[in-house]
Image (tube, rainbow, N blue to C red; front, side, top):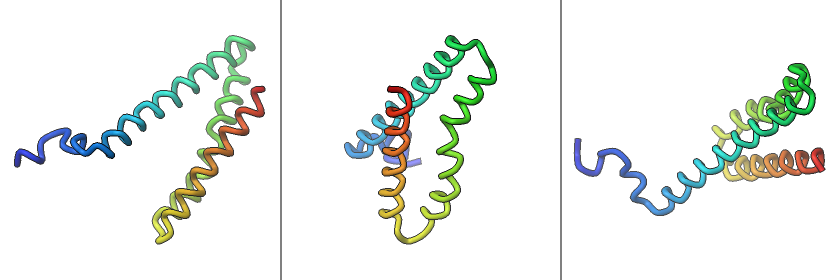
Length: 101
């Protein structure tokens, strides 16, 4: 194994390092949000059914859009797919904001 192929060599690139740590932060924030939302749903109702409904509603956009974006990302127009994926994320966030205000 060469010296440059050892672990964490990708973190030497500043852009990748920024992306990587941003993705780690965003993933952790997403899971913290999910846990706190479900904890609040349970704390307010003490109902497993309601907590399950909240979980389903929270993960439904992912389940519905994954097959669409999974097939489209393999096609030549990746930039268009990334824009659509970003817009769908904005839609999900805004629907959460409207639903919880």
